[in-house]
Every structure is written in C-alpha cells, then in structure tokens.
Image 1: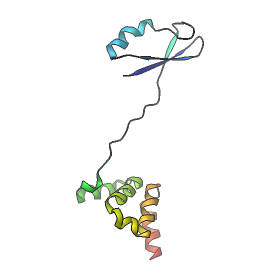
Image 2: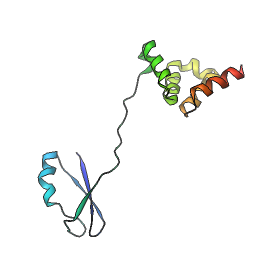
Image 3: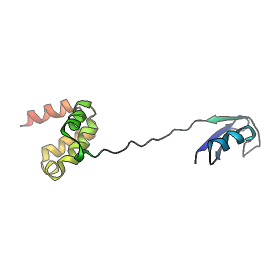
Image 4: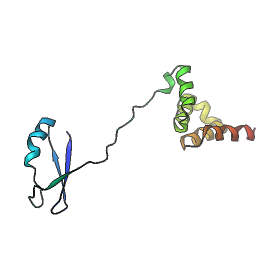
Length: 120
C-alpha cells in the first residue's frame, strides 16, 4: 500500500496517510488534516524511493552477454561477474581474487589490468 506523507505548514509536523488504492487517496485528499494540530494547510512530501535492481545470473549468460558486461564499463558489475562465474577457481587464485575485489570496490578495469600485467 502506498504511503503519502504531508508536512503541516502550521506546526511543521509530518503526517503519513495510507490508502488501499490511488482512487481512495484521490477521494480523501481534499479532506486531509494534520494529525498534530488539525490544520488543513498540508504540503505533500516526496520521500526517497528505493528501487531494487533485479539480480543478474552471470553463470547463465552467453559469451556475447558477458562481453557486453565487460564493455559496459561498470567495474563493480565486472567484479561481481568474475566473482560469480569464476567461482572457486577465481577465488583461489590470489591475483584474480584481488582483481575481482578491486573491481567490486569500483577500481577502473584498465587500472586493475595494468597493475596485474606489471606484477607478472
């Protein structure tokens, strides 16, 4: 159920109203009053909304999809893919595990690759 928050212009308190449907909210909106002081001088507060990103199953990706992840430039996603697809082999290799961790922490793929080639 959506929650609608309003700040009272009279006393400053925030009131939350919950409705089962948008049409119920639309009907009740005209008669909303502050829970603290009963004023009808309310201003809608738009709260932060968190939208979860659906997880990706890297192990089921085709090679073209994996290449797309690499070329996408999101270091964290590349690190997660290496960690998930590489499994024990990647985690048991100290260089690969370190590279995956750095990528997941946001290091640039080019910098990680350069550091790996310099350490060989």
